[in-house]
Amino acid sequence: MTRIDSRLLSLAKFHVFCTLSIVAIIFIVHTDSIIYSDSEQSLASNNEAISPLLQNYDHNSAGRLINSDVSRLVLRSMQEETIEVGRENTRPLVPPFNVTEEERIAWFRSKLPEFHILKSDKSAKQFHGRVLEFFNKDCEGQFFMTWISPARSFGSREFLTMESLFKAHPRGCLMIISRSMDSKYGYRILKPLQDSGFKVHAVTPDLSFLFNNTPAKTWFAGMKRGNRDPGEIPLAQNLSNLMRLAVLYKYGGVYLDTDFIVLKSFSGLRNSIGAQSVDAVSKNWTRLNNAVLIFDANHPLLHKFMKEFALTFDGNKWGHNGPYLVSRVVLRVQNRPGYNITILPPLAFYPVDWIRIGGLFKKPGSPAHSRWIKAKLLQLSGETYGVHLWNKQSSREVVQEGSIMQRLISDHCIICNDIYSSSRILSK
Image (cartoon, rainbow, N blue to C red; front, side):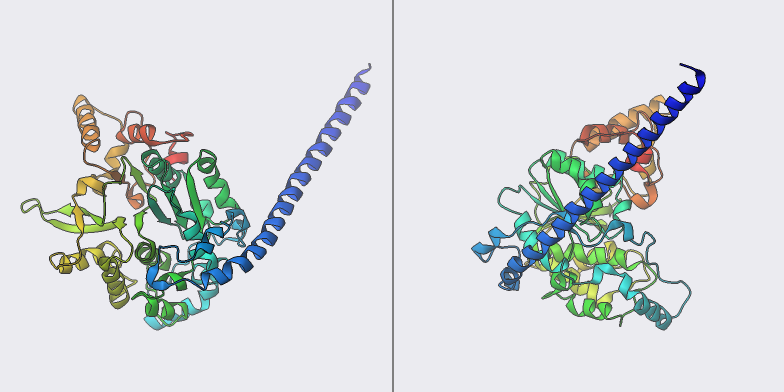
């Protein structure tokens, strides 16, 4: 074969390879579109069956099955979500700074169509039925998380939180209350855990339903109409503070932030909240935190929390509607009869303060540091249920070889893909 013939043959092979590759890609995309279209048609038929059942819901008996027909509800796949992640606004809706309250309210009204979390559309109206369907008698613990950011920002740190939760509660059930994660992209994120046999699902919330018959109803109605000042802090952050209270009030269970490593089972805890700090002399708590909440449905303290939120809402002060809120309410009611709560010491959920959280990521730099790491790991293996990672302070920390974080991750992961890679696990 001449050199020219050889070149012509190679060129022909290259064209054939390119043609086959393009055909394969088109086939995959077309197949995925067909599957998604079929799912949407299935969703429409399911809506008709579910709608009359939800009309029978008794708001005073939230969290209980009130009709045997509810057991026939079809738990809709997250692949059937009507919002495609590709259309998500990846930029957070942050109010303008240095403007008057009136100017900020005007901005908020103009942006209302972009606040998809506020909508009560066809997908959201299935919320209650999907919750009841998901949390069945096989669940050993009801767990909730919220995610109001785009699904594409749900990274390896958040995935690690889920892994550690299921490592400690293999038969627990986790519901992520999130419109963005209730999507094809969100489904792909959760699939490795689902394929491993763990019960995790994302559901689009219906906030109008969730806040109905609670002290937050009027506050939310005003916000939804654009009649209230959202403040300078992104509204999503404050909505998350309120959503966790309402979902526990309706259904009961455990709420967890997504920057948390669970170290051991919560099964012995009930109606509990953790102290973030205590007075060095008196040992009395000085601040509580709402990153972990464990409550029965209809607990009166949750009602007090929501009432405080609605009456004192301030979107300009960080923490005012979250950690500071639960602290000031508990301070007022902790000695009154009927509340029956347990306040756990900082070691339970917040064994490392946010100022010092970076130390967990550092490798030992001296023999003394090595001894400290061993002592800290021993302490965490005792009375600590989990470690809050204070994401705002630690998201850019790199997990160094020999650090406490390296040990915690390796001991409490399940999928364990690239478990020490800061870009995949603990940094965004």
